[in-house]
Length: 113
Length: 114
Image: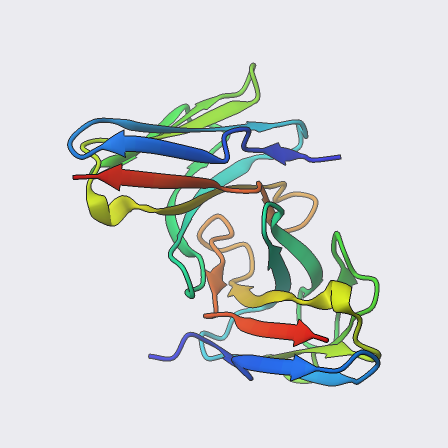
């Protein structure tokens, strides 16, 4: 049973436009959420995170929104750049219960120029 | 500035052979993890450790064993490799309850079992 779901395997966006990547979770114990970015033949790298006590966190072109009642979070990239083309993983953890992250299956973002 | 280092980077095994993947981190992190990545499956946790001398099972532990004899090292063993264990393996580490549990990953180890 998937606890973290990324229902869109891929997303294509034009350079300069907004990219919106979505993630749903089922475990109400999750209290910390992260997005990781992965290029081919490299390990995932941390992008941005949000605690369950917040509903928004911004870092430059990247913003993560959290809707706890809907158990949904999204990553917005504005403006999108060709270098953003990568696989994006949503991850969640329940800090009280332990620190292992549970990852979604990932969304492949392609930004065309 | 090594971070998390995995060896070997590539390996081809025959079915039934055994091998060990070595992970080393130089960030003095308490927590270490082994994940595997398969097409369309995302990253799945195999085993993890919350400190030296401790290990715990993750989502997909069957067929693997781990050891954490030293804080900086986390070993993943395959006792009798199977084709289903063909995957990319990522080691990772994080500080104890630090930074909201941001995990730092190694570059991956590509394992093929024939």
